[in-house]
Image (cartoon, rainbow, N blue to C red; front, side):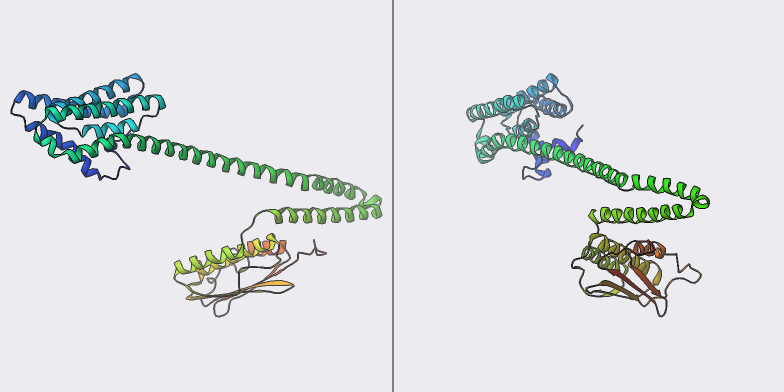
Amino acid sequence: MRNWYNIFPKNTGLNIYIWIIFCMLPFYFIFRSSSWIEIATGILMILLFFIAYRLTFLTKGWVNYVWVGIAIAISIAMTVIFGFVYFALFLAFMVGNVQNKIGFFILYGILVLTTIATVNIAFFTQDELFFSQFPFVLISVIGVILLPLNSYNSNKRDKLETQLEVANERISKLIVMEERQRIARDLHDTLGQKLSLIGLKSDLAGKLMTADPETAKKEILDINQTARTALKEVRELVSDMRGTKLRDELVHVKQILNAAGIAFDIQGTGTLQHTPFLVENVLSMCLKEAVTNVVKHSEADLCEISILQTSEEIRLHIQDDGNGLAEGADRDSGNGLQGMRERLEFVNGSMDIRFSEGTSLTIRLPVVIKESKEE
């Protein structure tokens, strides 16, 4: 259902106040008549026109076409009797909003033909006032011809754009669901069998521990090798997933520090060379977490960030001049530090943090991930 103010046409280049003037003009044409009967008849037709015009937006089916016919008939009568032709502009907007293609062209043809016919009749039946407004009458006739087509095409385009947005949203949801299912399948294929194998060999090694230590030792070695293989496959799987680029994260970091009123100095580039996505993603998350800690806890005035890449490692250093972590806070696990350590351990990285004259955080990541004996 449309709101009351939607009776005024949109996208026509005219201000809403001009349409309000069009609503007031018919009273001027009516009160020029000397007969009270004509004045009363004119006012009644105006009220009936706006009632019919409003109901055309609230009804559907054949009832809608009945009200459209009544509105067109009143517009013809107002043009012939009082020389007021501007109701046709309202009708042009209304016809342009008809969704049915056949109904639109039928009403459009009727409106154009009746408007042109009644304007020609009015030239012979009206006084000099009608002739004096000939330029406005001509503009109204042109509007009756063009406005319905413009409104119809605009509404059709809006409808198609809405359908396109709904389709794109649905496609996005389907893509997310498909990606989740793909990840679930990959994880199941990667880890499912190997974890089951690890469980079976662990049970077997436990049973053979006292009866056959040598065989139990071999089973434990197999478990170790299977776990390392599974870890390698998981890393390869995660590396193929889309991660956060360091250069994009640097842009976000600048925005965060600017919003917090903290000056910053960034040295180095966020473009890394020959770096796996997994490493860059972990580095980006650590940078984000570190800067978030600076903003939330340090009360610093300056934050210095440096990025250095060598042939063997990437070094990220973050230094602020704040007060460090609050006294009594768990400096080993608080403020996301434990989560950063866990991420770095996953890619053989290291983190060194010091709380002297602010907070100094140094992160080192190898360019190539290697498996260690501990894994």
